[in-house]
Amino acid sequence: MRMASFNTSTPTRSQGVTLLELMVVVSIMALAAAGVSFALRDAPNAQLEREANRLAALLEAGRAASRASGAPVRWVVTPDGFRFDGLQPQTLPENWLATGIRVQPAQSILLGPEPIISAQVLVLSISEAPARTATVASDGLRPFTVR
Image 1 (cartoon, rainbow, N blue to C red):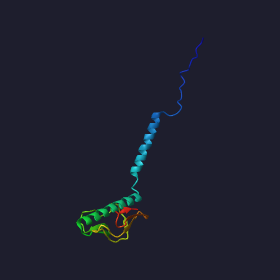
Image 2: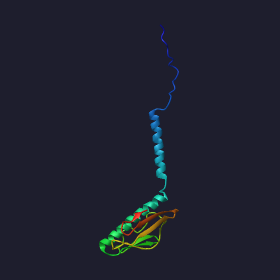
Image 3: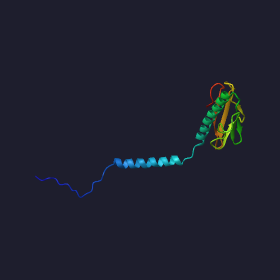
Image 4: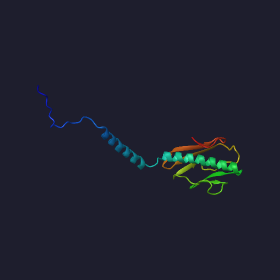
């Protein structure tokens, strides 16, 4: 009986991709995506939202300080930012984190010392995307929130 002989001199071609090759390709793509995300600038929408949330928190801090001290505190828009009249200087921040933030209406807001103030609405915009706005408001009883 004769046994079948196999020719071992011809190379065999693999069909498909190994798991290791697939993992290398996926890791290279992940590194490239991470590099691109770090290279992108902060979007104006994110800056505007961050400023609106920060302003709401600062207005609430000013309101709480006014109630605690019993002295009126007024938030005033300035050409280069804002200020809190009635508080010690540097008690709260007085500038925007981003450049080009505009507030409408550009008037002052009385934050206390009464626990109930008049309803307030401020509309923030950024010069990079003037069509986008964020609204910071309070009905006078509840805290300032971003709408």
